[in-house]
Image 1 (tube, rainbow, N blue to C red):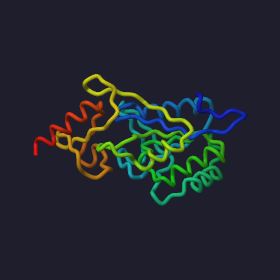
Image 2: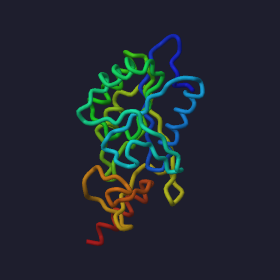
Image 3: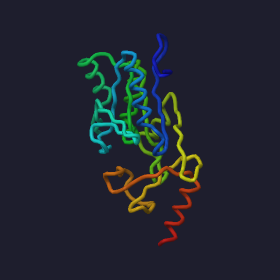
Image 4: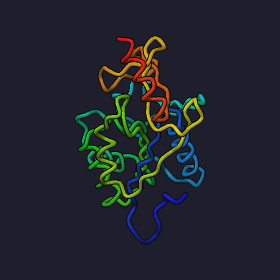
Length: 208
């Protein structure tokens, strides 16, 4: 587990991003298991905006796990984690799922936690939305994370997927609010390569 802090040096803020279906939540739960297998305590965070599965993480493989802290827009990350340490003791790693939904201030707080508390913070999420625009949390991570890693998946055509297509009633859509949760807000998502994304966008435009 290369994320574990050593006896010398500073812990880091990690950003692991990928398109839908790239195994982000599954990987997060595997990292948690690795720490716990060695007797270390992890803390799992999730934005309250992510309504899917409530206070649980749910991977597409069907694996699930309870979240320790649900983060609202108003929460102060540093204060929350300081309080958590006082109540429950040392934390060896912080894991964040769906990090794209966090605010810039939250990401700055996670950076501060990694640097000043010497706790590795590993964030998982999307880089861009269904319109190829950045999410606030992801954009900040791309600027300040110590380590950035892409988690890969494939488009249905077999090429590497880098984008997320939104579908309503089995049709791709290219307008709407940035945040809409699959299986809750009557939308579903599909990971796409750039070529397929632009093809579907052109087809949708030609339908009007």
